[in-house]
Length: 114
Length: 516
Image (tube, rainbow over all chains, first blue to last red; front, side, top):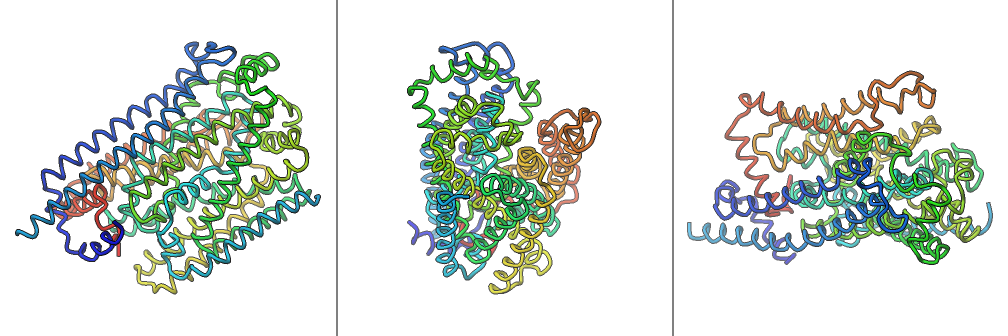
């Protein structure tokens, strides 16, 4: 993988970014990726910023389990969310890598036939 | 001073010097110096990012804040943990794909103008110095507490150590100091937490009910430190968005070979920080219960020595010495990273790229980097000598606020917004930086009617961290700056550059040839 990448890098000077940028497969890929990433980011930031807002209301100040109040439970949920979203990202990004590689392969193939 | 604590301290000093010695042999080019040759593995960089991230403010500050203010202190922990996701989802991979040594490199990949580099480097230097003063002041207080030596001697010792690591070992030594420190810190915190948990019979409910029965329910809900939602929302915004704008964190992404490794770095960091900050509950509550409010306050009004005092209660002098040595290592690792980042802005951005058009030879670059390291270290040491009585956590949260306001908006726009232009970039950075400094100067950390701050009087802006105003302001400035000057921009050329940025950011193609 690494060797392949390094040997490729020498050819990069003549990569035609304009062509890649106009490829349908590239644009579909970027659109899908950005929609997912921005969507999830907006969701977790919202969930996160609700903590300091709700924490000052009676909703989260009541006791949940024993003396433990809901603010702690909510915080714990944010910790768990962070771990889970981190694992989800790694998984998603693996797929993105493959799609990006497919886009580049398509570009190279088109370049050969041109 | 006694033999045990001297032993732990000398052990850490010795170990880090050996690392520096080995690293020095491998540091010959500018790439070695700034990025450890770009060859760190994911777990290594993950530990090193955690080493950068878990500063003394996080270890000593957060546990002390929880001990004194209960849940209000834990807000920090939540912010630091969730911040990893912003880095991971939005920043880490494009940053790796577009940059070389510094944040300015990444921005100038799109806008090749000296003013962009100049403004970005200035922001970096300001953040680095604020952050470093905070760490040095904390280090001075800690060493003073342990060995009873004068504050200025303590600051000088730390200053010499950090300069040594960076000067000889560059990024390789700095990274390994951070990796060692992160490991030690995780171990030390885990040990303390287990010992505290044992006292509560390994029962969370017992721990929480003991706190509420003995000290009152108010410790288990917010409100002791933050009286309003808006103040804490502003602080939380600075924490979660500021991390992705801190130059010493961003720089770490250039030490790995590709986006995939950058991703796995943050993945490691996320786990480490999530575990660490969960444990701060035990440290905070442990200190509150076993050391006691009065004893903590008596030693340090801000509670910065709560964790060491807890260690003394749980494990006597040996554990106290160990935890203090860990805290010392923590500070050393963070300040080394800061020195290196400051040097990259001074020597690479300003001296190399702006003053010499990037035409320095490899040898000159390394020499410039070393001189830059010494300069930034000296300036910080001198400032820290005068800052002994400043509120440390305020300086750190302020650095986060500047990162979130001056850097994050411009980074996001550069990667993701087609119509962004260099005028917008300057507008966003300058607005973020200036609004933070101005609003901060009018805030409650500078003005206090009761004389708790630098000046006596009512604060004009009653937010301890003005992020809730400054972040939107910076985004707005970036937007307006770009839209209003759109007619001045050479459209075809701007479009061509953005196509290249977009392809590189999303595919990682040509990571090796960026800005060469």
